[in-house]
Amino acid sequence: MRFKDKVALVTGGNSGIGRSIVHRFVKEGARVAIVGRDKVKGADTLAEMKALGADAEFYAVDLGGEAVAREMVEAVAKRFGRLDVVVNNAGGGARKAGVLPEDPPGERLRKVMASNLEAAYYVGCYAMPHLRDAGRGAIVNISSTATFHGTWGNYGIVKAGVEALTRSLAVEGAPHGVRANSVSPGWIGTDAVNTGADKSWQKGVSLSLAAAEGPTKSPLPSRSWRARKPPSLPVPL
Image (cartoon, rainbow, N blue to C red):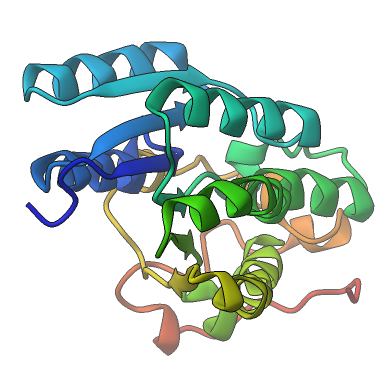
């Protein structure tokens, strides 16, 4: 048990990749703070972990705001008495971020950035003092291969920001023994991916309204995206 008696905080830990991360921490003996927006999924995940004998707690919060993120981190530190690991896994693409077909480009970017980059930034910043105090703390930010192959919409853009954030956290944390790294998964068969979208998907995830008039199918299917010609974007970034 590599994490026996350590405390791990996992954002977006109530479903998908985050839930699997939580499960692994529990298997390795960690005490886990599970953070997510969906209370039903959170309760289900918490029940599963407690059935495995874990010391765990679920925090139902939306991390797009600074005050909420600060309160959550402080609540976790108070509940468990320490904080050793933070996994910033919360986030997702435009549909999950609530982007609407009528949203202008700036609003689309703001919504996707809030649930991905801003959430990781706030949690990382407020967790840093607790990780320092615990000694040899660690931050793991979940990025994406979208940062180098590109995606339809703003997801790859904000994940590139997450990777830049990771480097800055590593520089600031190093003198205090706090490490920061990012992991870049490709397409993972989570519920969010498997449920897919109908033929109007591009209206909700493109960079602009004009680009929403593009193809009726995703240009990036999980296995053959490299073989397809990417769509043109009439409106530049």
